[in-house]
Amino acid sequence: MQCAALKSEFAVTTAGLSPISDSKIEFIKLNGHIKKAPFSFHQKYHSLIRFPFSLINKFYMNMFGSNASYSLEDFEILNKKEFDLIICHHPDSLEIAEKLKRKNKCKIIFNAHEIYPYEFEFDKEWMNRNFKRLDHILTKYLPNFDAVFSVNKEISDFYSSRYKCKTVTVHNSKAYKNLQPSQSKTPIRIIHHGGAMPQRKLELMADAVLACNGKYELTFMLMSTNNDYLKTLKHKYEPLGIIFVEPVEYSQIIEAINQYDVGLYILPNDTINHELALPNKVFEFIQAKLALVTSPNAAIKNLILKYHLGIVSKEFTAESMAETLNNLTVNDIERFKSKAKEFSKELSSEKDEERILNTVKNLILN
Image 1 (cartoon, rainbow, N blue to C red):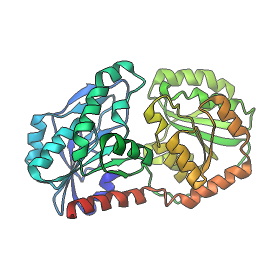
Image 2 (cartoon, one colour):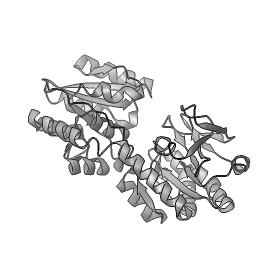
Image 3 (tube, rainbow, N blue to C red):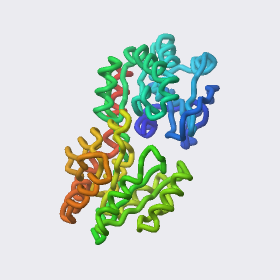
Image 4 (tube, one colour):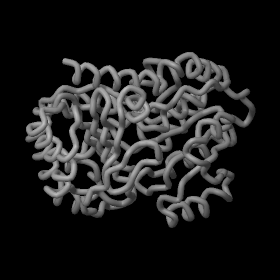
C-alpha cells in the first residue's frame, strides 16, 4: 500500500533480501542474515524515501518463516544514498534507521504491523528469547521517530502509551471494488478464507455452523500454511458437509468471495495481537459486500459496530458463535450487506493511502 500511495509523487527504491513484485521500482540488495521464526508468517519490509525526485528506498524482506537482522555493512550500503525519509517495518531495523537519521538529517517512520514483543506470544521459548530484546529496542528508539504507523486505533494507543511515540492509524484496507452484494439464498452461504494454522482454531467455526442444523453452508478457502492441519480439518469436516475449495490468487480473493452471504471469523483472544487484531480479511469481506459475523476481538468489534456491518458473538467459543448465527435472519444479512456496500469506499485503501501520503508530505516539508 505504501508504494502505491507514494510512488506517484516520490521516486521509490526498494532494498533488502529480495525485491518486491513491482519491477519498475529500483532495488538495493542488503546482506541481512535470516533468523528463524516459529512458523511461516507474512512478509516484513522496510522503506526509504527521497523528496522531491530521488527515492523511497524500501527494505523489503520477502521471506517466509524468518526475520532479517541488518548489520553495520548494510548501514554503509544505505549510507551511500541520500534520502529524506525512512520507513522501516521491523524493530531489528530501527537502529540503522536512527543512525541514518542522525547522519543525514532525514525523517524516520516505523510501520508497526503488530505488537512485536508479543509476535509469537503462544511460543514460550520465543518469548523468553525475544520479548525483552524487542521491548528494549522499541523503548529505546521509538521516542526518536517522527511517526509510527499502526493498523488500528487500539494498537496505536498501545504504542503511544508504552513507547511514548506519535502514532498514525493506517488500516490494512483493500482497494475499492465496485461489486454488488450477492442475492441471498438458502442455505445461507458462509465463507472463511485464510491460512490453515492450528493457532487459529478453525474447528470453532466449523463446529458453530454445524450446530445450526443446516441453516448455513460453510466454505473454507484455505492456504496450506500447515498441510497436516489442513488434511486433519478436511478428514473431520468434509464428511459432515463443510466445503473446502482451493485458494485463489491473492488479487482475486474479493471477487471470489463476493458470491457468498456472510464472512465468518473467530480469532481466539489468547494473545494480545489476536485481541487487538484488525486483519486484512475483514476489509476483504467489506469489499466483497458480505455481512460480517465475528468473535468479539476489540478492534474488529469496534469497526463492525461503528458501521453496522454485522454482529459479533458474546464469547470466543463455538457455542457462543452458534447462538449468534441462530439469531441472525436473512433480513439482518441483507441489511449488513447493504452497509458494506455503503461504506466500502470510506473503508477502502484509497483513504489510507491519502493518510500515508499526507503524513509523509507534512514530515518532509515541515
